[in-house]
Image (cartoon, rainbow, N blue to C red):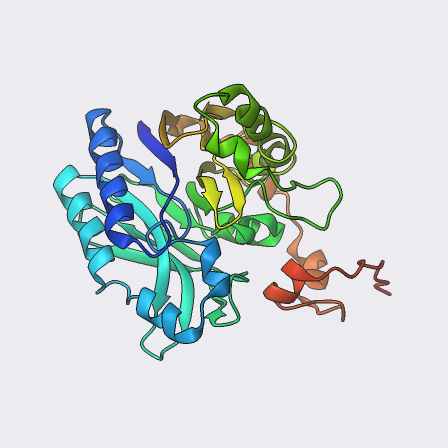
Length: 327
């Protein structure tokens, strides 16, 4: 097999400003092309903006949304993919043919194909629907790509299902870190003033990005998604102030053993690049473990236990989670 050069981007988007956000995407695509990147991942909803949408009504969201693949933003990224012979993923709000709105992530490939994933665990707005399927597809470079958006990655079954569908590389776009969490040991808010004064005191904001509100939190679970399922993972994230919260960036690329190949904790827009050694895939731990599965024992995973919540309720509920008996 061969290696594939991949890149992942962190950048601070502007809410409701598609023109600006697309200009940043184009700039990073050109920068990636200079480094011969073949697959490039941008953050969740980086074209439309993210956290402000929780305060928008239906009409404002519909105005911001666009169809996939026919929308102008998607076509602009598709043109970049063709021009630079690069596979490019980016996120926005999708307006479906039936009028529903989705937190969606699309990937444009150099051959003109466009694939779209709808966030399975969408919680950003009561007007945004949740997707109901996994997205894995062939790439012209001879690998299979998968997509899981932010909270999708937190649910271990989603990563395993994506692996079972044959994903070699998973694009994992996020808007995370620095979030208000009801879990006492999971993330936490960052003072926006630290972001605003980053030029004068970069050490203070970078300490937050590297600490339990950012990288330390990611290290508790993100490497295991790659390791346990035997795929490479491209983690892309927003960075900086986002409607009252501060995203921690931490763009990184992990191999199929969960090892970090490239990362950043800088408080700025940035691209990280790494070469993926595809020869690692056939005998990596996760793929060998998957062959030892005993599916006949896993019926419990498909049964409702009575404590399930829809994605919005699960994300925002403050009620303690009790132990569920499964007799």
